[in-house]
Length: 141
Length: 287
Image 1 (cartoon, rainbow over the protein chains, first blue to last red):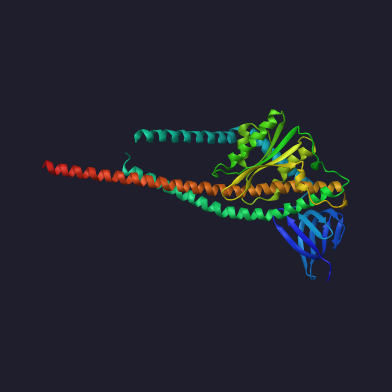
Image 2 (image 1 turned 60 degrees about the horizontal axis):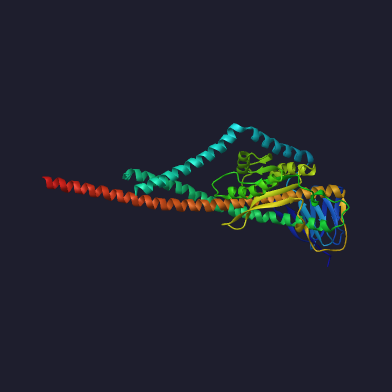
């Protein structure tokens, strides 16, 4: 019987594949790599592309990954797949967006701030009304 | 005493409120189940990630990553995950309260705090409080994606990388069960030692492609992101559970209020009938 290894392909949002495989081909950063059981420990990043898994018995299955990290241990292979395309520029843009939003919302005192304050004041008023009602009820009875 | 008609309209209005709260309760129950499923789905990734990082801690790496190294705290950062909407009981407030104590401690030591909020409630709260919010993201919806949080996490990680932050914490509600949600403050950076302990083996190292620094940078970034993402997903499950419980209590309260009003209404009606009867009788007697 052919030697096998355990393969896990997971993304942050879901588990994609988990099972026994004879061989695996993945699009590593420096070029495609084929992993057989008893491969030495390796850690590499992945490019967007196809991951081919030859399962026990020779059946093949293909998955698409949009990048991620590949970890190889002699008897286990783990692919931590990204859920979306990652690029330095895209990440940078997302970070800037988050910063800008915070600054904008901090500066935007009238609308947001007033809303929050009004909400707090309303809660206070409701509590006062309730207290008055309770007092009245006591007196009335 | 209020007249019969007044009480009747009041009963109607309470009944319609009850209808709304009951509907919200049911919606929250079904959303909670979905959120729990999502929570389960995200678990394998962070477990695998933790294992890889565990391996790394024992591998004889030629490159020590800054996320593993402790340094003196001069400025700390908090990523606060809260809900966008209210009507979920004391969920957010309990969490903010649990955060205020450590924040005060830092403040007393003269250490500045940078905040990063995910969710509207947290933003509003800390803005009122006068906290320094450096990044913000809200309206993640019921099924958030990892892409949504990349930006805010990067702001904090960049600050850490550049030495502007020396500690990074994640604040969220931990889903214990439907009735209990525990506010949690978790240290993200530097990565706590306890988390990455595994069985000690002989010294070995990975083959890194293209090189150790690049691979580790990417791995660590993803690890932190997945931690934050898990917090977000868990917080959503908490939100729905808390809302379900709060709405159930509201429906029950509305029910007892209706009972009380009904009793008052019956009394008022009885009084009116008695009065009418006595008027008729006294009228008849007068003739």
